[in-house]
Length: 605
Image (cartoon, rainbow, N blue to C red; front, side, top):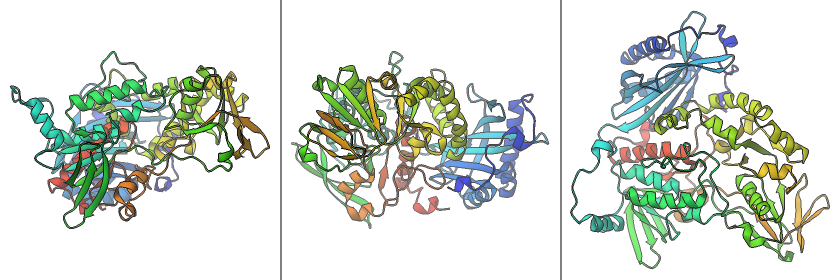
């Protein structure tokens, strides 16, 4: 990756040639740097701007200067960014932010790594934004930027209809009919169709609605929330409530820290209702066509008993999850197996299999959850581990996330801090943190798993759960109890040999061993996220789409929340925190296109 172009790694005190700089005024240091930065920006002196960065510093941008998600590493690339976009963007009105929780602060990240973090606000020709700077000390008592994030928060002429901008009209009996007409799009077609009414689709639709873009959500299931309601009964979120909040409507303070799937499903149904999102359930798209001259989609929708409707829209947003079709490995001899097989997406409950033998193929979160469900119901359960797994306890993950995701930090500020570091920097931090956690907090779990033959790893690049999440969307287990069952032998483990074939009573392995089972659950993941789009839009459109999910050469998420290779086509995938934050950035891009303040030429550097 381009992020390895510099031989230096983190800007440690030894590398910088300085001692502990703790005896400084954070506010004074931040003010001095920002004043110099602001003066250089005002004069369009790009050379002076880049001189305020380390040689291997970073500038990360979220649609503020580039209308895209970009990371520029090193002074040369930062100068290219500024030469191309500084004047065009109109970066202005830089002001230090010193409200509680975002005031300048000196952070001792590790014993040999210290930086000063602060925020400043700014304006552009089209909006307002927030920047986060991480300064590091130099021997001459000067401070330079190691990383800078610029993130657009709002469009000046098209603010979200929130707070004082909400609807102030009184309504004396017309609301129900008005909502019926809005939801049916009786008098107009929507500008955007969002496909999928899970959290991704609903949050994206909310961002679009409250920035003034008529949006229709379409889902094939009968009820909003069924994408969670119809999954296995034991499913529960493995991240905390603070990390999993929904935008515009927060969970109440009585909400459990870890949300059960059925409870989340009901919340999403209420969320769509309370935010007045326009959703057609039990509906499927049967035909689409793209008109490149008018830049519009013709979309035929089967409303499942309510007839067929053909809509003309500007944008399609696929919010259909991380993966495409459920993936089940091709294993010879399936016809001979007398038991049942099911992909984890179709599995419901171990209560249906009491007294039987089960095998779970896979070792991700869902595989562990399902294996633990079998174990809790007294089922003879074996987990077949195809490859090593990164394991972290829910306590350790909650501690790591809890630095910003907690009852104290406003969610919006936490999201800004969470995305403020380029992945190259975050990866380097995780490469130090992950082994420490494995050798301390989680040592008993890791050692116990090793003793029973369960193979663990430290993630891609040794950077733990975040590397696996961002690059693969899986391959890890946040331990919510199954590890103890594995260590205690209640969940048996089979690994080290490939599956050779089905047998009449189970599976045969290449080492000659066999496992008997009445049911085999394949928790083996999903295909390409573009699969669902290909089914709706066809091969010609699909051939133009870039990779969706994973990281590009700059360490940015590929093809998601940003231009993906085809006009009027977008993907809104991701976990709760990333989707909550970036759904607004997706909405702002669509709004900017509709208001003719953004075109493709603006995102090319």
